[in-house]
Amino acid sequence: MSDESRGFHKPVRRPAETFDRRFAAEDPAEVSRAAHSTAQALLARARADPDGAIVERLVSFTDEHGIDDIAELWSRSPSTSLPGALWRLYLVQLMIHDDPQTAALLYERGRVEIDSADPVVAGAPTPASPDELVALIDTILRGLFRGDFAVALDRAAAFCRVEASGASHLADDYEGTEPERASALTTRALRLADYATDLAACASLWRRESLT
Image (cartoon, rainbow, N blue to C red; front, side, top):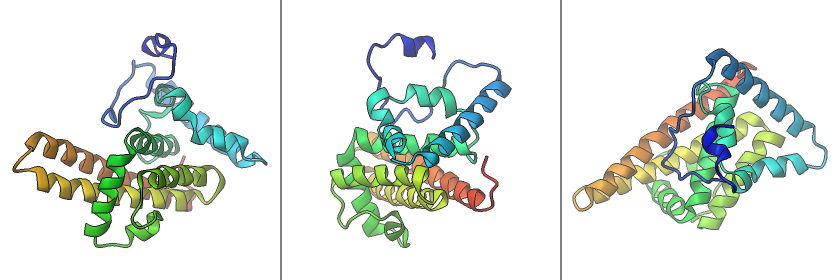
């Protein structure tokens, strides 16, 4: 644990904007080995859990413990790696749990605007309420640990593309009247689009048994 993490007595939840948080540098090779080994061990243990109790603890981890512990393990991993995929999924989950109302607003706008099958692939109700989006991202995360890993990644990538579309179109709406809000929405759209690309690439690597 970092000195900053130890200083808090309760789990610390980081807002969605802190996607690029960086932690104290250690030996990069050792950090990489630890990230990959813990991700592989965690996934194997979850998939071997007969009653799903471990999966439920993993799904609710950031609600109970915040994001710092996961960040220390996986945040510096390559985007197209197993720990990199898990890190991105937890960040997307945290973004939605932190502000489900905004997530629902972006998703609905994106669903209307996007010209693709992504809303169908993501699997959200139409229209999706804030609570339904929270349930959706938790279901996708469960799919990583119990179902078809590649399918879960594809659903997450589709979700990110819909959200990115919504954020981009809302940014256009606010450009003339609230430029700061438009800028924040544009930044979110770009980040979500990058995550969609990374998660889709991870899904492809998993199907080729090359995601490590």
